[in-house]
Length: 634
View 1: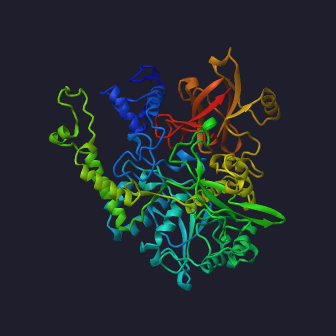
View 2: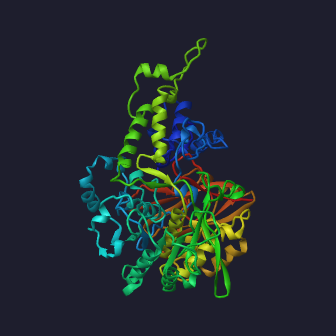
View 3: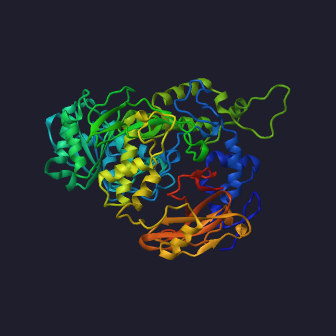
């Protein structure tokens, strides 16, 4: 394909790459317009310019949160006025995004549920896809959701001593207050982000869900009701009938008790003994006390970290801004070994979760967003007299050449009232609010477990547990009794599952692995690496390293490597197709830092599209709304 030229730097660039300017981060696109007022995203922008402007944007970020710079304060941290947003889960803990939990069933025990649009089977988002749902009358929501298709394979209502099974049960659709918690946990784990155009998705957006409602109404769940839910799964091997591989328990029992004497713990242990991966929340009181089933040795107990709503950073700065969430801790004896709890940590604060749609909050938040957009001048022109009052110019100053409207300088009473309502609902998006607790931390671990079972169906729950702990990031500054093995590493854990016994990629290294010359020749000799060696011309006379790259893309027609090392030209560095849909190759790269992606051509997109490396957790801001993968060679 003939190169076009970047409208800013005038360097040659493939037009397919220039077209990604439509996916630039909004704050960066605004920055480019300030430098080149006539520029429009439709003209394109090369990755080098995007990275250059993004560096300028990054340099303007505050080291401390700006959420206290407004009156009233916002309720979540942010670091640049143009980025007053809550980051998604994958931006804060990179995941293996090409595996989605498809074909795996997660069971949830919770106080109630609602069939939210984020739990639909459709993961194709249009430009305005989710935003029209607030305009649909409440009585038509059910028909619309059923038309799109839900991933709720079954709903079980065990409340008040009954047993009501089926997706037509009134308690699934009534939108009562106790429906919110289960909606939150299921969507954080397995939501596809439909109402946010995919932004606020969980790690397992195609997993099937078995929703078991337990309790006595009003969200009250005695321990005996948790037991009822576990027994329902165990009776007649229902867990097996529904294909349940993961059970998520975001609730806790009544009082501390030795696990072997506690019926809830024994039932959870029985499920784990059958090969099911069972995960439970550690609790949120910050005390040395565990409640059933969190003290069960064969249940993975999950605590939380506080990351201050910051992007994932690899290398030397890894963990710099992490602190512990106030989760419970403890230890139990099992087979003459002391098991510390929690065993693993995940994000515990500032998690985006959808608002309950039938609630008045859902419609109020939509109205808040409309007012907010009008005040910011988004989507409609502000009157000229408003603009004059919105721009502050001292008497002895000339009018500015460029008018930048700070709408918070006018109608402050409106802004203050608006922010108060936003804060009351923990507003982060017209349809999402931020949530916290080990209830949502555990759902991330459950979702990654679902990805691992998709990657390697031969795994048992014990296998998944071991791989998760082996892949976790240790936190040396925190006592092991508080952090267990460390922080959940989604991409690393799923990559390990693919390479475990019975996995599709058992014979292959992980992508972005630096190979020694001996390892390279050994793999070529044994036939586990048959791809031709690709040599970068710029590296021919300089010290270089052989880097192995691979992507599991069974439906691809062609996969190539693109990056700064080849001026982001698709198709120039094709990877070789091995068995089971694995595409791989080796590239010699000079010492230094290299950003890259894969370029995929398939039946759905014959022109091709780019994708970050799902196996490499080292990522770098790109200026686009998703990150580049990065490798550092020294």
